[in-house]
Image (cartoon, rainbow over all chains, first blue to last red; front, top):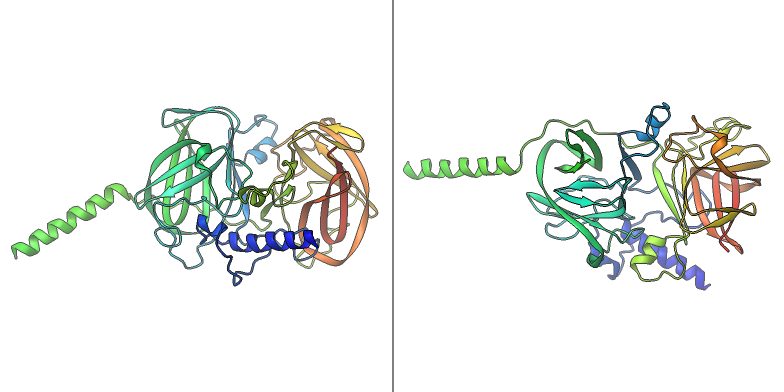
Length: 209
Length: 194
């Protein structure tokens, strides 16, 4: 019975966490029973359906796992990001669903994870190889991207005492509306840009290799 | 009139200011959302949620990252997933399992770290294969020489078929079971955490 209640609690918390509209404070707040989603439960049935904000992975070099199939590929990628992709669904995202000057998990569900397979340089600072979680403080014209070492956590609550690096980058308006929050790596002269786009806003973090 | 011109100048200067900070970027090719979306499973289950609630009672032992193809009315095992062949246990990138401590599978020690997990699927049993080659696509370059451990387990039939391919990590007497469920089939790989 005890475990049933625990499962129920997790289900309720998951239900309240999955929508991107939740602010970090909503962990301790009363969850809204109106949000109906399928949590990741231990029940093996058709109920274990994929998440509304599906997980995705990006690599640099791009499509590393496919490249690796061609024998010529290197043994290890340079960097990998695992993140969840919330939808716009007709909502205004920045400055509305995601308020300015507040922490945003840069995705949904589990914290967005970035793994460097070798040390890199960002804004002249050395970033050691390893895993970090990423979160963001968006403003109208710039985003502050935060690398934090509290890995394997859920995105709604950050522990700033475990911040490793902070980088501020400008935002830009884009013509195409991104329905899904999208992260991708774009090759650059100095290495790679990690580009993040959602709604009509995009920001890029240059990474020197 | 002067006021209008001043006002116009003001507007122009504002919009040029904005133009400096919000430069319109060229159109970007948007990657479509995958048909077989990715998902994660942790042991202990829902570890990231427990972590931010300060309710972690056992250390993180394992994490699986996999993609979830849908049945979509198709017969799955023996058709879509062929018998007697090594299958990537999901879709797209090969399924990854990471142990955060040393474990035992089929009485063999498996060191903490990242592995690719495949399955050789048969009507009555599946052989799970842990392989050292990670960050790969599918099972196209599966190399038996890089196997770490293999274990054959029986297939169970379930009453309620699963539409989406599902992997979860569930508590067991010896540690955890890696449970795979799709269509009317369920298979469990026992993992000792002792």
